[in-house]
Amino acid sequence: MINLKDIMETVTMISHENLDIRTITMGISLLDCADSDIKKSCEKIYEKITRKAGRLVAVGEEIEKEYGIPIINKRISVTPVSMLAAVSAGNPVEYAKTLQRAAESTGVNFIGGYSALVQKGFAAGDRELIESIPEALAVTENVCASINIGSTKAGINMDAVRLAGEVIRKASQKTAERDCIGAAKIVVFCNAPEDNPFMAGAFHGVGEPDCVINVGVSGPGVVASALKKCKGDLGEVAEVIKRTAFKITRMGQLVGTEASKRLGVPFGIVDLSLAPTPAVGDSVAHILEEMGLSVCGAHGTTAALALLNDAVKKGGVMASSSVGGLSGAFIPVSEDAGMIAAARSGDLRIEKLEAMTAVCSVGLDMIVIPGDTPAEVISAIIADEAAIGMVNSKTTAVRVIPAIGKREGEELNFGGLLGEGPVMPVNLKSSPKKFIERGGRIPAPLQSLKN
Image (cartoon, rainbow, N blue to C red; front, top):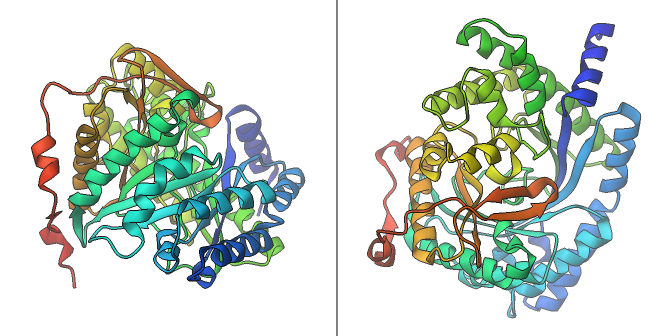
């Protein structure tokens, strides 16, 4: 039973602690839009997306007004486009342009799924799609791309890793006059989830329904505020975080269920990830500092993040039987005020961030690196991160932005939720070029044999 105390507590979370629904994402299958004629395929895609998601933004705004819950983004994810490119002859960029047109018609913030799943090798359409990503992101505003290059079951496709490094660098170069925004819309995954509502890595998995609603909640400010009142030991800290995550997830469940009902499509999952923003008081780094660290990046940061991630998941699964996606704590540098400050001061470096990714929800996220970073170094960063995901049976990802024309210590500013960040140092003294050029596949680890 809801009481006045619960209502007032939620009001405070929304008005003073930056609690919000970060995204309502509609997943749409495009498998029935495949056609040997790319023009016909694009027509089918546009028709289906606009028909299914035509009311998505309006319904989100209705729920915001009725319940007083901010819903920051309304988004769409689609079947990995490489699967359509396998059937049609033509330039895959035509698909990106169609997705952009559909995004504009429906009014969504982003549309994800310009993607390829190549963890075990390249199928028809995969390589062409991946190689087209820089152009596709340069000629669109709202389209996002992703590549899954590894998994615990398959190992790591190092040929795809090499290609991904080249693609990220080219995407930055093609959008250099727009603060290299192209690279900020590419995620390279290991163990990519099929129901992730967050961009840039969202795509609609082949095992998903024809159409589904997934919700991503966020509340770093709420957790940090709760911890300010906690004077107990780390066991008590974990309990506070669990209780707070429970409340946040219940709100996400409510919004997702209501959106599902009004749109007439199944409700999928609540992703209860703590997704920060550059706004003051909405930082995962500040949560870690509330636990007792002087600054995010100090020794002890990985342990504190492990506690946070585990407690968030435990609290969330008690609140909903539909928890999915990534669910935990994100550490995107340019999108987190505390991470930005720690990176600027030199307390937070890429090596420390890599260690933190072993225990958080995703990986190296929204990290600005020097513009002269070679493609093979970017590929090696991806390979290291994929190895962490593969061996630990978890999702890891890389979203790095080579800041063309900028050096360590300079800044790149994306604006909005993508924020801003300093160019962080990368080890360019020693080269992984020969290792990356070997190609082939890193075999799956022993723990993949679970049958």
